[in-house]
Length: 116
Image (cartoon, rainbow, N blue to C red; front, side, top):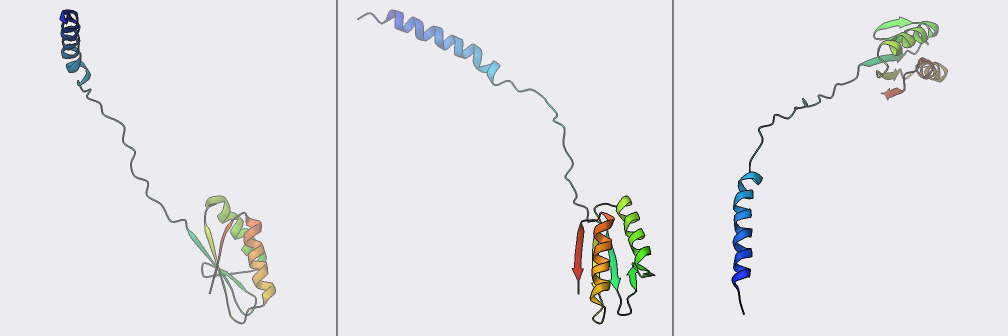
């Protein structure tokens, strides 16, 4: 059996791989854009309180039901992701509580939390 053609083919392949290997391992200097890590921001909280005498408080300001609705609508325009924390006094009327919740829902604020 004549192995001369086989040796010729192997030598040609060896030369091809010796020439191609440095080209394949060459690296490119690239600077990929980096995205800064996202810092989760806490949405602002609006404190709504329902007092025992039927008064409403928004951030320590006493308001009527009409004024509370208007103030919550203004807050929804400026900060639509705000969280409304509703706090109810123990001796508050249930109707006043539902009025405060309804005012918050009508304002467009969807994040409503009930506090003790």
